[in-house]
Amino acid sequence: MPDPPIVTRFAPSPTGHLHIGGARSALFCWAFAAGLKNLGLDGRFMIRIEDTDQARSSDESARGILEDLAWLGIEWDDGPELRLGSGRTVGGDSRGVGPYFQARRVATYNAYAEDLIRRGRAYPAFETSEELEARRKAAVAAKRTYRFERPGDLVAGEFPRGRWERAVKGERHVVRFLSPREEVVVPDRVLGDVRIAPGELDDFVIRKADGFPTYHFAVVIDDELMGVTHVMRAQEHLANTPRHVAMQKALARLDTGAPFRTPEYAHMPLIFNMDGTKMSKRDKAKAARKAAKDATTKGATPASLAGACGLEEGPVAGFLAAEHDRLDVAEALARHLKVTLPEIEVWDFRRNGYLPEVITNFIALLGWSSGLKDGQGKDVEKFDMRFLAEHFSIERIGRTNARFDRAKLLAFNADAIKGMEDGAFASRWWSWLGEHEPEAASTVRRAFGDDPPASPRLVMLGRALKPRARTLREALAAARFALVGDDAYDFDQAAVAKHLQGEGGRGLDLVRQVRERLAGLGDGEFTPDQVHAIAEQLAQQSGAGMGAVSQAVRVAVTGAGVSPGIGETLAVLGKASTLARLDRCLRACVV
Ligand code: GLU
Image (cartoon, rainbow, N blue to C red; front, side, top):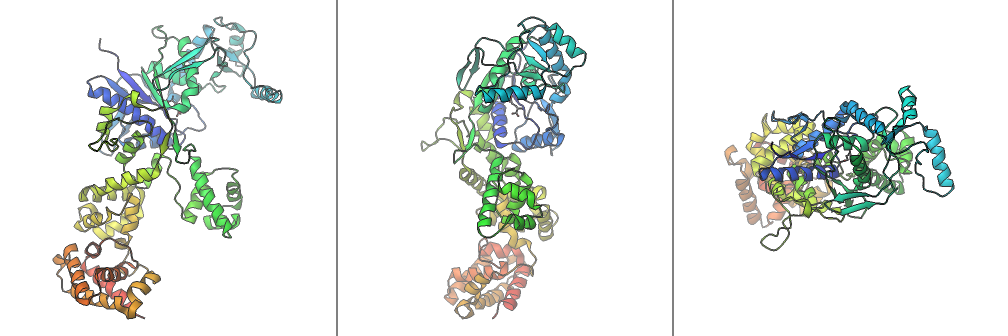
């Protein structure tokens, strides 16, 4: 018999987008399994969708999470199937331990819950939520911490026949686990043994009144039945783990009778913002609220903000007063106030033009390091997935909280963009536009032909944008000049006054002369180098200097003083557009 596989898993609840912290958990699990594969061992990375919270789960969210993982290049061996753009499928059930959606496994959980009841390790409990709430309030009033007290009729190891009969007759109930009275030890590969004193666990619920398992129960059953050997997850789950270990000790497999195993646990450090607060979805609301409050000090009111955002005043006022953190309100306010909300979910980074290989590199450093040094003795920080798979080890996961340094991530992304081949940049930028900025993509198609990445002018534009754009979105902003019609860009009046009309219209004069010289170039000669040479020649002959010539021409053809190098700017526009724009400027800007 071959050795059983070594299985890690990522088990997202499909209640929203994939959080960047979730991506980090998935990445570490993936890397662990991939490292084993490198050694010729049967390491497997599995995805399980934890959708037992019926009200909050959605198929759409599950799909989004899988797509984000695939986008990051974190591919799973076992789990829901997803067809990639390339036509390849990831996931599947080759080990025959699925289905991988918990909502489809309810019969299994019920069988195990019943088995626990029969063996006197769990019991139906009939307290209503009102009764429990009253008990909780009484405890608070008496300054006691509330915990569910085990009813007196229960004896560990004895079948609770009376309760079982009431339950079978259909009386509404939950099922509670009869927690052990002895110490529970959680062996953790990162934190060492975590000990829970005897009696600290209460009889928690394992099956809800709606018949669905709680997270704790489903996770323990599935980790066993799906052969999970290594559970790597964030430290926020550490408090749950003693319950899981206690249940593993009480459960036995219904197929073989074998006791449940306790997997290896590794709880990973939490991810914090640089200011020490926990990185969470609420950060978006906080940022939008701050911007809105700044606006109110400058005269805006909840009513005026609501009007400008197309929202009712009530929700905006409530949002400002921190009564709720509604994301739609936060996003509408951010759009109106032109602030960027902090990216929290993988989708946010994706939409804002971060590269997947940069994200995986960066999040790999949140709580892990390779320990390797480069030639200068500095930590090796830039690497790819292959490196990660080769060097990842649980031993090198740290214990202290990780800091999410956005400036560093942006610098990583900028470096990766700068280092891309021209052609690669053009195609990646183009596919990003198609996915996230369809309107701009149509404009690009109009300006650069049906297959834009194949257009030498687009490749040239890309070469000019790469050193300036830290994200693909920034590249779009910097490319705007080439995407507007020749008569559709606005002139920035301050730039016009400074670079064209100042000093007796010297700039306009330079524009006139450049126009004349450029008109003499053939279409094939309209290259960045040739154009640059003409500008330089004029700069020398006129004595105006290259700065003055380029700024004047730049304002003339883009309306403003910021664009790539002048040779590249004009070559990207092409001869016809350049001349049309220079003429338009000479008509529009002469005083
Ligand atoms: N469904 C849980 C979550 O999304 C998974 C926790 C675990 O890894 O056990 O937080």
